[in-house]
Length: 164
Image: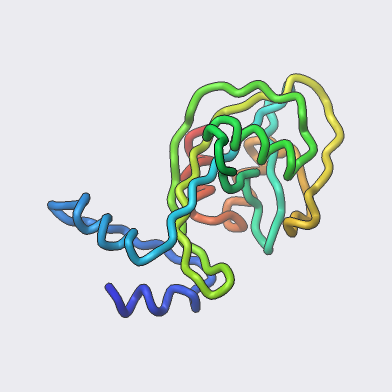
């Protein structure tokens, strides 16, 4: 396992599935190898039944980001969707799921737990990509368009998409 962890920065995308009768113990060991990050995001649906996606680093993704100090996870979800897309009239609905993923930032491996919420955008609004965060495009996608773009999504995002 330590050898795999040393190689993680060289993979563009990967999945690790941990199976053990004592999952809590093995996950605690695994997570201790990383700096932990809490994040939240939204699966935003508009009045036409389309879903809000961003395009960043060569992948279609859902808007999300890190929690700030003193912020609830629900506040994080709303703020991040607003900042990354420019959509400000949002209704927060229920918690959907959480996902975990690892990434390299400034030479350190991070383990991010992202809490996902269903949201609705009740009316048409201007979309403004947060370019300083590397967001190149924003789009409202139908279910059919989402299915076509699944190969261009991270596996954790595909897991979330499978719930909508």
